[in-house]
Picture 1 (cartoon, rainbow, N blue to C red):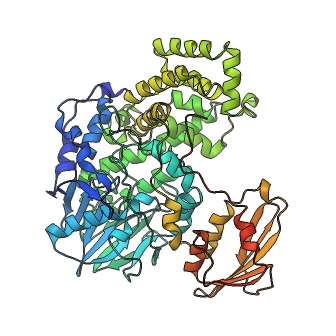
Picture 2: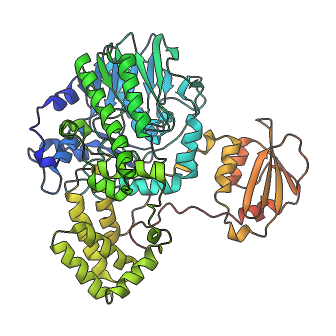
Picture 3: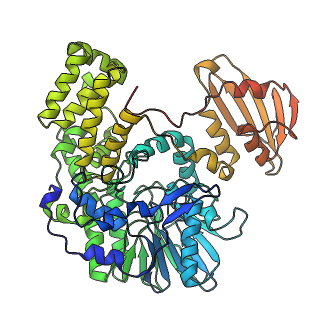
Length: 604
């Protein structure tokens, strides 16, 4: 159902989004220690001030963005508060006997500290008595050092396998994911009706200091109960839904159900456009039904780590059941069509939601979309190959572009062909054709100009915020150059990694072809952890493993974990013990690549 066919806005979401408002942060700007702005919610005030949507923004997306642009401290229910609009995610605060339990402390430390300060300004200077990470996406843990210090003895609670997936996503693949995230969020385009409007889940992400404190309390099973600062929490495990490790929780004393990021006011991603593991729509639907069965009949309010709460047992049941049906329908119908011979791209074109779900605003594709979620389900089961052998060994983009340009009679003719499709309103094919010219003839300015115009028009028409952002950021790269990536997730999290994870992050930087003929072995004695690890390089592969036997090597290095991190950060070898071939480290480091956090996306 097109957005313009949606039923009139009944105002219920706006009333829910405003309910419980206590106070806003004034001004809504957060700066770091150097005086640089890392968050500015005031920049999105235009969404609340304009009576009518701009003609450069899909009206349904404008409405969603205006709801997300509300900022401040809100009371959810007695003893449960949220700070919204100070980052992409919400920080929840649950009052206990001595202080407050902080849930999902935002992207970066500065907004998290500002959120806690806003809470304390109106609820008293309560100490943080526990921290909960609902899942390992960095907008739910990255600001933890804004609410507690790394050496604090405050319990940090997270689902089983949290660290494994936090490192996998944000360190091992962190450079590529955060780079794509710049396009996902339209980071380089200006805030305003022709640029950044929303991300569907919230306005944008902050750009402050990201950190991680490892969990000290692990939740392993549904029904597990923990008492934190006198408050009883009942947890529900939801691995494989919105994240590989995630959990909801219920507060029976408050009759409040936190759905983490498993039930928000949007159709979510099954494969986020920034990259991630494909999520399991079938299990997602089942977890939502389980939450409804376990807690839905008792809960008086349901809230999440994004958006606004829903109050009332009947409304909660309606909301959760529709969210349940949404993911279940996408899964089952994609499989039905897949088993009838349709490919992922064909299913994405054909699949339509039932009318009740199409009309439900919280099921609209502001963050995910039916199109790319259907393709994700296909990928989960069938992989990248659609079965057509013509697609088995295609040329990469630049080689494809060169051949398209030649087949169309040169770059000028190819651009004219693309312009014809654009003038006819077929922006999708115009973008595809113009992109081939950009890759096949990179110096053809007319191709870049045309593609930028087509991508901009596609962005202005997109109801899905992340589609809009990718289109507009792609246009920005074509006209102004690729944006710089301001967040270095891997380096900001390294102190929280285990030694094995640190060596894993080193191994993925080995330039395989340059290391084919290199052979070396190093024993690392990490004295403050009483750990000994053996590392061997052969066939371009850096193998490492705990080896308490200390069987000898080209080089033995004795150091602390902090010194290990220092070496890998280029801080030198002062104070570090070395026995054996002193050139081994230099040879190893000479075979490492530096990741490029600013690689181009829509240009070669």
